[in-house]
Picture 1: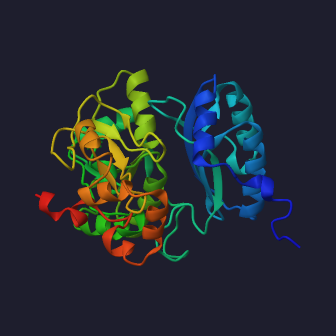
Picture 2: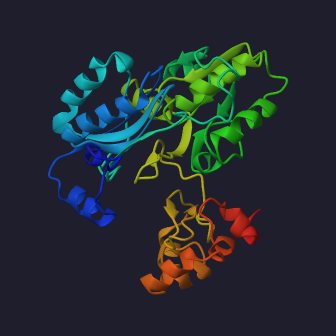
Picture 3: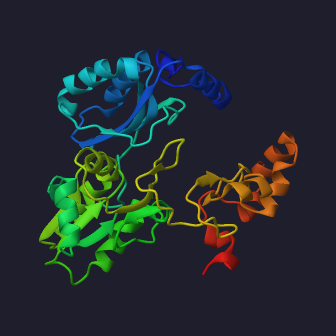
Length: 350
C-alpha cells in the first residue's frame, strides 16, 4: 500500500517555470506577511496538514515551519482572501490573536508555492530542550521605546546572519559574524561578557530569533534584556505611521524571492565583484554553486549573473553536461552553496 495515499494533494508538484507563469498571470494583489508563535503542539503533523488544506483553498503561497514548539511562517495571501485568512488563523486556539507583520515593500511576488514542513524545532539553536526556558523572554519594545533606548546608549545586538546585516542594520549595533542562529548564540554571549548589568537591545527580521535569544541571555544572568517587537518589519511600519526618526540604515534582508526591502534610502554595502555601492543579493547562476552574494547590474551583465569566471564557463555547458558535473564528486571541491564570498574569492577580502 502506498504510504502517501491520501496525502498526495498536500504537497506541491509543479515546476518552477509553471509556478512563475501562474504567478505572473495573476490579476490580483497579494499581501506578504510573516508571523510566529512558541506554543506546544500535540500533533505537529496533523496541524501542518490542516493548515495546508486551508491555505491551499485560499491560494496562499509561502514557506512555513511547524514543530512541537510552535510555528514560524513567511507567506503571501491573495488580497481578496485576506480577511478570511485572518479569521481562520485567529480561530485556532494555538494561534488566537497572533500578530502579523506585513511586508514593507510588496509586489506580491514574494513566494512561488506553498511549502509547510514539520521540523524538530521552528528555530534550531543546537541546545537540548532543558538548556533554558524559552518562554522566559525579555521586554518587548515598540519603535518609540526602541529609538529612545538607542539614544540613551543601550547595547544593540543584531541577531541575524552576517549576510543579512551586511546590507542593513541599526546604528552602532553589534554585528555577529555567524552563518546560522546555532553559531550566533555562543558568539553573542561571548561578545556581551561583562555587560550583564547593562540594557541589552535585540533585533532581527520579524522577532523570532530575538525571542529565543532574550530567554537565553536571561538564563545566563543578563538583567535588562529587551527585544524589538515585530522586528525590523514592524519597526518600518511603526516609524512610518507614527512619523518617528529612522535608526535603521539600509535594506532589510528577507527570505523570499525579493531577498530584500528598503528601510532607508541608504546603500551601505558594496558589489562583491567591483566594489561599487550595491545592496542587491543574488544567487550564482551556476546552480552547482548557488552562492548568495551582492552583485551590481554591470557585473551581472559582465559575468552573466555568476560569481566567477569558473561558474560563467559552467553555465555555457549543455544542460546534460551541467547535470553530469553536479553529480560528480569533484563538484564539491569547486562549488559549494554554503560557502562565503570571501572563502572562494580571498583576494577581495580587506
